[in-house]
Length: 178
Image (cartoon, rainbow, N blue to C red; front, side, top):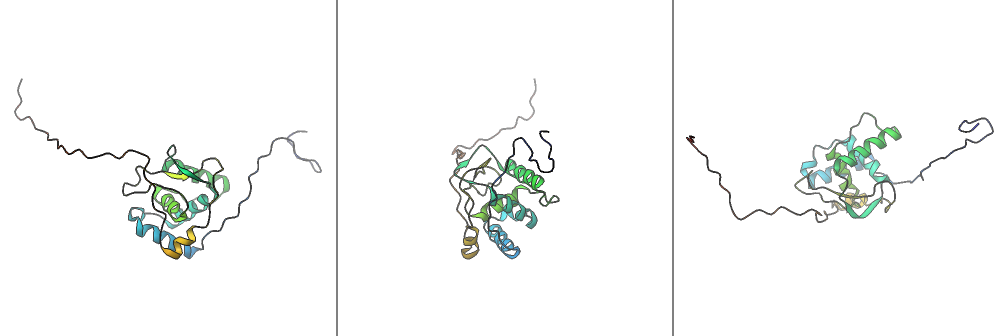
């Protein structure tokens, strides 16, 4: 009977499996130190929660890296990806990964191209590979612990708004009558 598992018989149909990659992850103390290094460099990420940072870091360790920045998917997409992964893998169901902890985890990885700036969360993109493939993650986070230095931001792929040298002044109309 197709689709039913009976003793001694294999289930028929399509089976999708994913290769299991072993990645090296920081210890609890190393996670704390990594988060401290990131938030010292980028204070706007200080609202990062330690548990959210750890969950995001775990997910990021399983994602491939791209040479080129992904300008099609923004921060909210990647946070949703983490939540979907959490649900599928039954990982920390009570932890809701927001933008700041996710971004902090990207920066702590130190092998993901990014456009982090003082304009966070605007104009932000990451060199992450959607739907598999790309260069596997590495343990570059170890160099962050050793040196205290993070991967520098890539140039933004979006045009930067230039300030006009002309000043616009608005005049109020007082006592306007028809």
